[in-house]
Image (cartoon, one colour):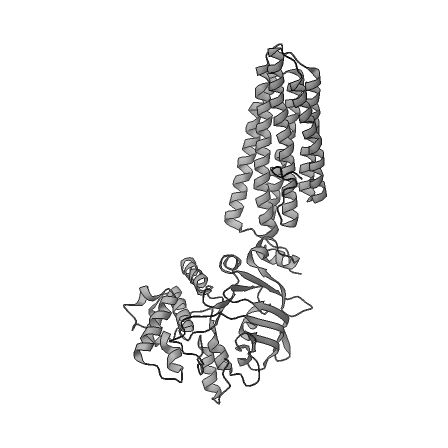
Length: 227
Length: 294
């Protein structure tokens, strides 16, 4: 069998993949801090998350540029081409996940210094955050290991996040007539929705795993035509 | 369709075979054949030999009409040998032999009584190096096939074929005012298009192209690729290329040939070009198109 060629190109592609997936670690850290900020109503920590989103955006731009350069200079095809296409999607998902953390952190100050906190709602959101963090870790691992089954399992895990989001919604409906409590409830609902979207982004990454491995793109779940 | 073999000297046959589109006894009138129907080539269990050396083993594939089929593979894998077997040029090499079946729309081109020169008229060839006849004018280069034809052709018919062929090769506008200048006065890209004009002047059904752009600069290459895209509307086209991107850009179907220590050149995989370059079914194909082979 002839020797392996294009070692430099392959090394560069592997480096870019590791760097892109490393963006999921950054998101995981951001989401962890976001949950801490929600739990303790920590406005300063929320500001840190907002400022730190530049790192996620920077990772996006850096890896995106590297992938475009590979496309322009190396004419990748077959699995390499699918991988690059998938990484461009993954990068977009990571960038959106970072933005959702920012969205949550931006609403924390809006609830005021003495927010009428309903501990049940906070508990639900923290649960959502914890579940979603496991989704992020699993999405990264599935991509690294090109494990389609593990990627598909993200849908199952994401269902529990969706369920918690629905519980948040019902709780917000039942939160009572007090204007401040209702405002707090609606604000927390926005936070829950943002976290739920992060879970969806993790599933999107899983779909890219399947594309890299099989060459076929299929949504694991069709949101517009639920089965 | 495939004219019966007529007695002709080896010299005559060899001379015609060496031109881009050797002309035998035409069974159709090139001047009146307005509506074209490109033809299908069926290849079944083809083995190709040079003496005792087997260059290609067991190729079976269908080459579809009005498509560009690219043959890719590393040097020595037999793709050019295979290409030359499609219009009976392989057998011109001393000791060369073909086993198996090749048919053009169901007619066996290696059948008994089939005239190989007529086969080569129906299945024209464009070579790697542009090879216009150096002492002939541009006009005469295109008309060369007609001049070799045994049938008399009037001057006006000849003018018409030359103009139509040069139009067909995207060359007319560039040379219409200097048709009597030598073909060798043209640039490399123009010379290759002149050779294509010469090939299509005799109204083939199939065009075989053996690395037609390897000696050309990028702009001339793109001009040839544009021409190929247009020509496929009228012809079946088979192109051998070492340029992966050219295969990806210019072909509809790609066939990957390979050889290894245990097997002569053989067809590994054939499929739609977009499949071969995005999701090939064979690991060998993946390694080759990705440049994993050293």
